[in-house]
Image 1 (cartoon, helix red, strand yellow):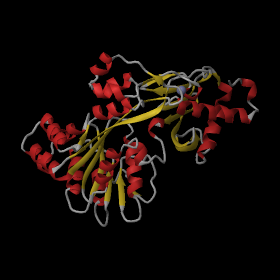
Image 2: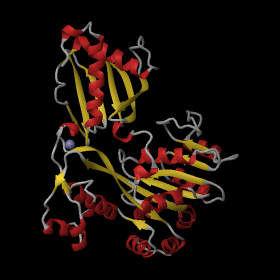
Image 3: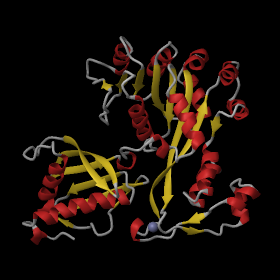
Image 4: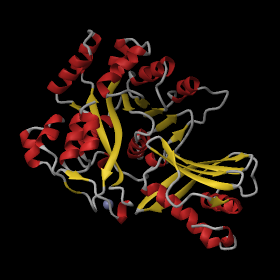
Length: 400
Ligand SMILES: [Zn+2]
């Protein structure tokens, strides 16, 4: 660990920062804070919403703070070392455990010096494929690809903040951004720069709705709208998507894909408009992935397994695993995340029923009859039988 005597040793500071970033990625945290206090520097991680001081990082001497800040700034390649009294934003590109990460960070002045926040680390994996995201499940891959390659309509990515929506959206845009499609994006804040894509810059003079009206002018095939959270944005998005020749991608906070239909009605949208534009939704949640190096066979009781809806056949074929802990997973038993996915294709039959007043359960029933629905519970079952997640994670979705 660092002590005040090593000020001259640049490589110790370099190692300190590298080790810290690596530890954060391995622990699967969402944020890292490096906070100057009156007499020391505090390092904290946030995971599953809770802040904590990582093991071995308590009490960093204050004398080293400026050196740590300087090293972080150097890693971004863009931040100004001399500017210490203004906020700065930047990115660090780093390969950790054979994966390239782009870590976004914010640096801002406080009364005790500059404070660093590296944020949204857990949803920031780069160069991940549709196959990876769909866990190489052929049915999910086919359903997803078929829908994102539509010529028109609205496609929604749903889930709470930190659920991995952004990763899915960026991967989708990347896949679509070949040479034969013109893509524009309109978001309140551009978080990830994408190649072969026009990303609208909003300003005080250009609001979200104003930008959307402009973005669908001229020649465009795919339009990505940051988030549909109010009537105005949802209305414009649906209108654009209901016209020939425009595919609209967007995100929304809903619990599951059948509920998504009714969310538009809650926002004040007429059912006819929703029915004419909305074609497909994907829901995403992240769960702890069992470490493949150390997980071991689990003897869950038949009662426990039947309680989460497994059949005799499931119990016979399941590769049930539980966590152990090894050096590769820092003894946590988990490494990284696995995406639990839900997909629903809104067929003409479903939309007709929706317009005619069908409730959520009826919509779900039709979707199952038409084989266009894969629920969180079903996807959880697949991943539990595969040994990707343990019983604790499996219960969350099956019983909710
Ligand atoms: Zn392990």
